[in-house]
Image (cartoon, rainbow, N blue to C red; front, side, top):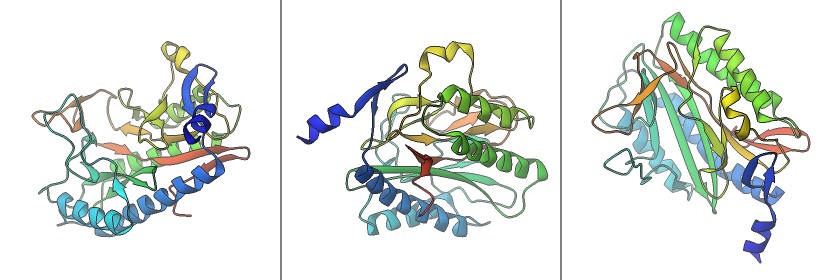
Length: 276
């Protein structure tokens, strides 16, 4: 019966296929996971200071997730590009690292930024969110990068409502970023989320004609992990050897990453990872 109900709620929405719509009950279960994610990221903001290591941050996060009865979404994930499964609960990406930074012995120093991505599953449902944190004082240019990336996410959430095509939202994300002289990453995008960390549809942060067939309509019950990834320099990125997990900017300029899990309701957007 549950599987039949799940199949009924799997829809196509103007070109996006296989989107699994969530009930009000499911949204609240996702919000429960989102609260844990929010609490972890809030604690990371307190602990991410000069002298802390990324491994120490991850240790605290793992303890918090376990105490809440959750499962760390990232730990154990396989990547065909890499030789090993992801080893931690957090992605801790420092400076030119865009995403998938591996926690370890790296010491955070004054002037660094660290993008911390956290995903949690509780009672079968997921929450996923990311923030970029300044370590002590950072340069005006780096602060600008962080502010604009946060503004791009805020603009997306403001625009998310039933009947709107994602291309319109993505175009506005891109306009916010490029209007400030920064670049939107093309190679990595957001995603649908629910029982699984990655569901349909793919959620880009930019738009061009080549993506026309990937456009989709926002409908009530859809839940998206919206995550602008922004570079100071060019948008090109690459995997870093030898780990083939960590993604870095090709020009080695700084990158920022903010993310929320966002549900579409009849009234607009409902952020499930803001701690409410």
